[in-house]
Image (cartoon, rainbow, N blue to C red; front, side, top):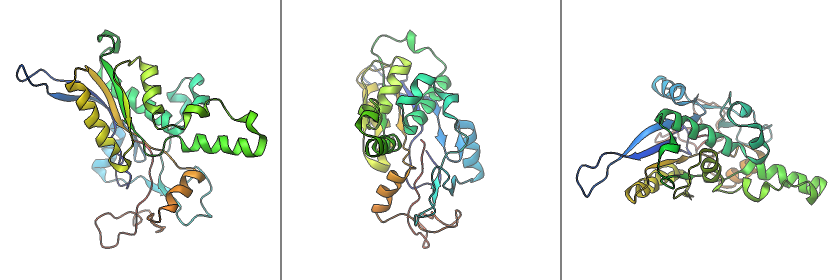
Amino acid sequence: MTTALAEHRAPAHTVRPAQATSPRTTATVVTGIGVTAPNGLGTEAWWQAVLAGESGIRPLTRFDATRYPVRLAGEITGFVDADHLPSRLLPQTDRVTRLSLAAAKEALDDWGDDVAALPDYSAGVVTASSAGGFEFGQRELQALWSKGGQHVSAYQSFAWFYAVNTGQISIRHGLRGASGVVVSEQAGGLDALAQARRRIRKGSRLMISGGVDSALCPWGWAAHLAGGSMSTVTDPARAYLPFDPAAAGHIVGEGG
């Protein structure tokens, strides 16, 4: 989960059934974790930042936010897309999907076993996203209105969609079992894990699950500002103070 941010998201997990405690019960265990967060890229860096109390809130650099009343965000730095995805995936994915793929791969690597060794259709994916591929959609709208419809990417048909993270993770790792997507705002990451647990109880052997969001672009910013509950405090250390008398609103973050 991204620490010190209002839009909390659970990291990507691999979830597997543990040895049954009785013939009629199946326990579910987390066997791998992957994290992409503003205060740490990768589980180890993120956990060390959590222990040290390091916030990921900082001035936005993804776009020029000087004209907006809110200029701070939980922005991930140091994430080089080409280091995490093959070149063929870059034109067809939004940043949120790239972050999702990176977290899912780390979770599978942390699990340390071979998906191909599992029975067919026994491994699936359940993810959560409250916004989908906002930045990809913004670029295509810009192309539509400035150049014309022939310049809109065919990938726009799915790159913006809430379920695209589930689909891309499933395709990349050959996870052909029962899968799905949850859209339930801040609770999405936890709801996705609950849904993965249900799939385990119904017989799935492995589930990749968690929630990831990224909408740090002008279109996404306009949508968040319309809600009227974002903090306009300019000091990163004071902008987001949940459960504090000085609380002034929330700060939007990305990752999961």
